Length: 160
Image (cartoon, rainbow, N blue to C red; front, side, top):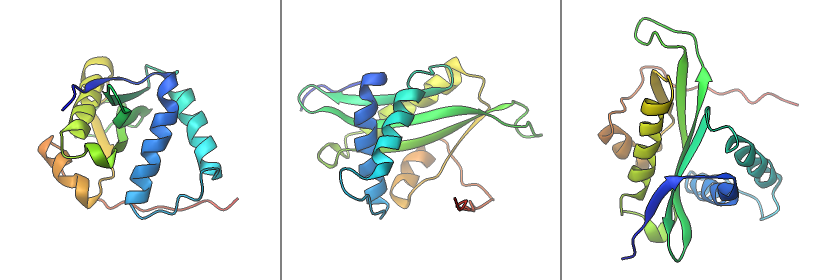
């Protein structure tokens, strides 16, 4: 097995983040469309822009010397009103956790998520981090200290 490095992503990693996001969305049962599906260009601009905002966004990637970026975790900081259990005004969102199929079950997602959690702790004022977990990912997040919320997520797609 080759030595794999986990590092903070830079703007040049945006295409890899889009590719890994596609893998994640596909694993969640979403139809990605073809290689020229409009969401891909929007995602590329999103990640390129976000990677230029290091105080409020971070992504960590696992690099294989031969295959390149094979895993990642991303997150951002948002302003949120304080409450009795979290008096801070910043909240973290963890998302885009994905690993190339050939590199799964090696701890790469864990290493990327751990690096992101370290960033939240050491470089931001975030009081808590939230995520939407798949059944497959729930065990990893529980092992890192995440707990299930009492409140389910509801979603409304705004018609345009």
